[in-house]
Image (cartoon, rainbow, N blue to C red; front, side, top):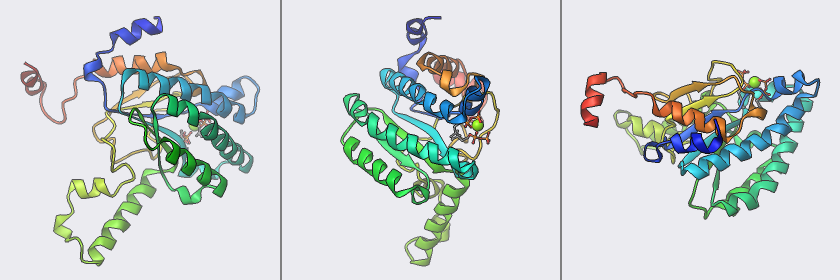
Length: 253
Ligand code: IPE
Ligand code: IPE
Ligand code: MG
């Protein structure tokens, strides 16, 4: 189907506020062509552009992209270094486009693990896009849920230790406020490309009621038309949140 046809099938009044994507399959995509895994990562940048543009066109509020996990630090050194160099180049190069499209950049994850050069480039991009009011583009970098939840537990424990919080006052909201994602709504749709059916330590707490969408397309082949397909699929689902279908239908009437 043509991209425009898919776009028109999307009900703009029932968009997910937040879509999160595990951008997977770069290495396999490159290997299949007899190329180095890094070629796959480089090629994936065009997919990031296309999907970000698609999300902005639709008017989606938040888009989180899983770019590098805590576990990815254990990959071969050359791949990690190549990915860090790609990050610097891409973040630097994309700032004018982000500003042109009113997109504000955010980062979640353990930034202290990143090389200083990446941290500086990131900070500059965060500052330069801080006034933008359109799409919130959230990069998960050196991110894992286990890390994030452990940090949240530490922060809450410190508040208790300092006498600023009672144990009985730890609510769902308190937990959410101490996660890296505290200023965003929970994702309603989680897409994973590349054919694997797992979550790989991504937003475990926040995805509690997200719709999960897995597709075979490897990330470097992924474009906004694939993203629109996922939104159409999302809009066909009945989200029940533990209730019955009848209860959901009654509320719609
Ligand atoms: C996802 O692609 C990108 C990162 C994890 C940085 P992969 O590099 O995991 O590609 P595959 O899954 O090995 O094909
Ligand atoms: C998840 O992909 C991390 C990112 C996309 C950044 P991986 O390729 O690292 O995950 P596993 O190893 O297949 O679970
Ligand atoms: Mg992978």
